[in-house]
Length: 66
Image (cartoon, rainbow, N blue to C red; front, side, top):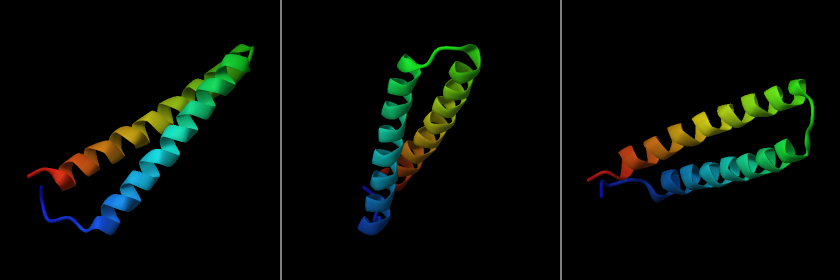
């Protein structure tokens, strides 16, 4: 493992946890919505959160790679 500041990893892990919670909530909301406009908005939000999560996971992997 690379020499990484534990505070940086803690920050990334915290942001990952927040985004995962956001995704979970959005999926629950999507299950309760009806109507194309609401579904499209929710899908866009889920896609945005997933992209952020993917970027954070890649950053964490890059930092911790040996």
